[in-house]
Image (cartoon, rainbow, N blue to C red; front, top):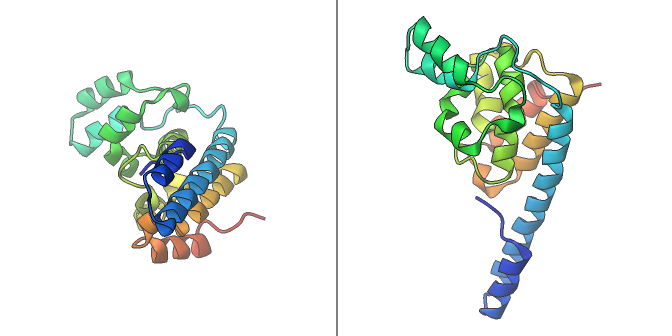
Length: 185
């Protein structure tokens, strides 16, 4: 969910919202500001990453839909391969199951787009499962991440750890932080 803006909080004050509600809105605004700062960290960590031979976003959907090799190749032709920042929110949402079908190159290329979309409150599926519980399906998908990229993922998980929207995910996030996304030395 997108955090409120300062203007929206001021409007809430004028409309007589309770102090507790205003405090929660202000906290959500501040979390939103932290999320924007984290977006910059993620963008820097993944700058210049290209898809190369990895599984693409639309190609991943084809794999999920059990498409044949020719159909997957046609879908791959539509995939963004040069700059993950060109991938639209709509494409990420439409192809959300592709996260389960990326190889290491595909994950490294698409992960920042998904993380930033989630931090901006535009991705309604959440990334906690992929980064915490989804590790049981293959840690190798994250094997190409650099030290800075792993730090960015760790910061993302730390950011969502205390988010009320991730209360159910909290034990899985804690375990993933302790066992897989440990602070790199």
